[in-house]
Every structure is written in C-alpha cells, then in structure tokens.
Image 1 (cartoon, rainbow, N blue to C red):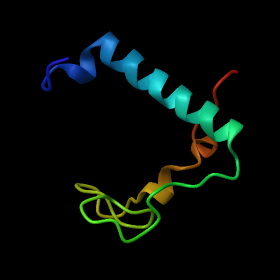
Image 2: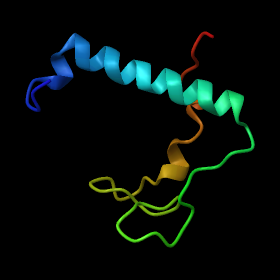
Image 3: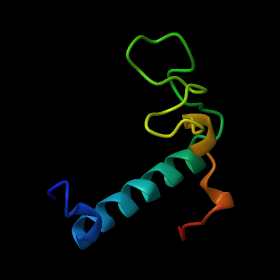
Image 4: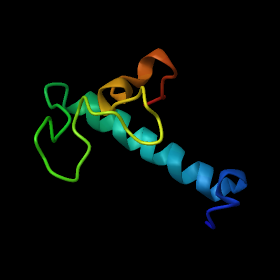
Length: 73
C-alpha cells in the first residue's frame, strides 16, 4: 500500500472499509462508551480538537457515521 497509489488500490479500500465496519460494531456493542481521550492529553487529538489538515473537523464530528451510511450486521 504505497502512499501515492493507495486510494486506487482495492486492498487499501477493503482494509479501510473493514476498519469502519469494526468501529461501527464496537459502537453498537458499547453505546455508553465515549471517545478517549476527551481532553488534556499531550500530543493526542482530543475529542473536540480539530484535526490537521482539516480545520473544521474534530473526532466528535466523526463518531456518528449513520448520517452518511449504514452497515449490514
């Protein structure tokens, strides 16, 4: 999965789709668990901290994928 060709690599796409599926399953099984770290951790993006290079996106914006897509169980 070389950096400059990865988005066109089917293995890269399947890998990330599977990671999304695992995240959705974990969220479904642990509805009361939140994103960690919530705040105050050095060198780690906190829940409401913006992520580079996106200046308007934080981990909190990405927790609920159901607005964009759903996965079959």
